[in-house]
Each structure stands twice: as C-alpha cells, then as structure tokens.
Length: 184
Ligand code: AP5
Ligand code: MG
View 1 (cartoon, helix red, strand yellow):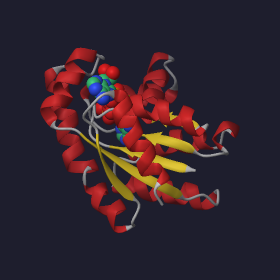
View 2 (spheres, rainbow, N blue to C red; view 1 turned 60 degrees about the horizontal axis):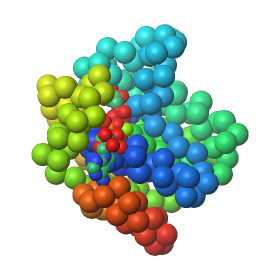
View 3 (tube, rainbow, N blue to C red; view 1 turned 135 degrees about the horizontal axis):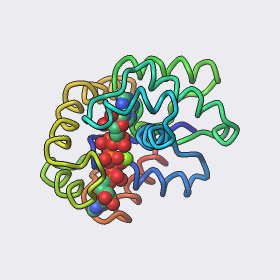
C-alpha cells in the first residue's frame, strides 16, 4: 500500500507518517529526513543537497528521484510505504509513477493535510530545526505554493486525494487520517 502524506511545511507530515506507518505496519520514507542524514554523513547526495536544504529550496528532481528509487527498492518497502514530502513537483510525480509502474504498485491515497500559515509558523518556530528560521520558513512556504501546491489538483483529478484538517491534537489528526485512508 502506497500512501502519500501531502501538505505544506509544518502541517504534521512527519509526525503523522510515523504513527500511520506503525498502525499499518508499513515503511515510512521522508525525503527531508533522508537528505538530513545524507548531509550529516557527508555522502555525495548530501553534498549535492546541502545548499538547497539550508536555504529551504527544493533539491533538484534528479537527485530526489534517485534517493526515493533506492529507498523503495529495499526489502522493508515491499509491503508498501508512507511517502512524506515526496513528490513535490510535477516531474517528481511523474518519476514516482514510473517507479511504481515498474514495481507493479499504485498509489492508494493522497492525504492532503491542511493547516493555516499562522499555525504552521508558530509550530515550526517552536521546533527550531536548522531550517526553522522566520526567513527560511517563509521561503519554504513560497516554494510550496509555487511548485508543490499544483499537485493537489493533479491528484484530485485522478480521484486519489482527500483533504484532512491538520489542526487539533496529534491524536485527533491521526484518527482523521486513518478514516481517510480506510475509505475507498
Ligand atoms: P522536509 O523535511 O520535508 O520539511 P518540510 O516539508 O518543510 O516539512 P517539515 O518536516 O518541517 O514539517 P512536517 O509537515 O513534517 O511536520 P512535523 O510533523 O515535523 O524538507 C526539508 C528540505 O528538504 C526541503 O526544504 C528541501 O530542501 C528538501 N526536500 C525534502 N523533500 C524534497 C523533495 N521531494 N524534493 C526536493 N527537495 C526536498 O511537525 C512540525 C512541528 O509541529 C513539530 O514540532 C511537531 O511536533 C509539531 N506538530 C505536529 N503535529 C501537531 C499538532 N497536531 N499540534 C501541534 N503541534 C504539532
Ligand atoms: Mg517532516
């Protein structure tokens, strides 16, 4: 089962992906976490990604698709996975379709978490990751609007997307997500 957790920075993709992956017994792939690990380990991909992640810009699609393709080939991904933070561009969506077609898999559901920008900024400022400064958060939100938000229409047209209110306690939101995922 392939589920995409979609939404702007700070809507709770990572928090909810972990819970959902545990509930469904499938893997969790966060491209952001994968880049941060690669950067910490100074791998070739990490060195390529660093300046983009630091600025809150998107890492080039070719690099991102490679990291996803490698992760999804691993054995713990055979039962499916929660994709958190991927795809974020039309090209990434097309790359995902190719990866899944080759593996005879398909997207079960795209869960679009919705949270207003004011709440997002206060959540991220309270977390304080290295890219959680006011300026970089604003850039991440702009990049999301320009490059990623158009995918909402893309997946809506394909009949795959469900909007889920991301405001409330973590538990309230995860119950909503579980309901959305279990609805055909
Ligand atoms: P990424 O790591 O994906 O960051 P992001 O999309 O900006 O999202 P966040 O991880 O900040 O937020 P989240 O939605 O996961 O929310 P979280 O659960 O943490 O990407 C980072 C960078 O990597 C990008 O800028 C880019 O450079 C690169 N990158 C990644 N993917 C890429 C791709 N596909 N293509 C190109 N480049 C890519 O929650 C946020 C905070 O809120 C936490 O502190 C959490 O505890 C709290 N919280 C969560 N839920 C609730 C709740 N219900 N109530 C109160 N607080 C809550
Ligand atoms: Mg995250």
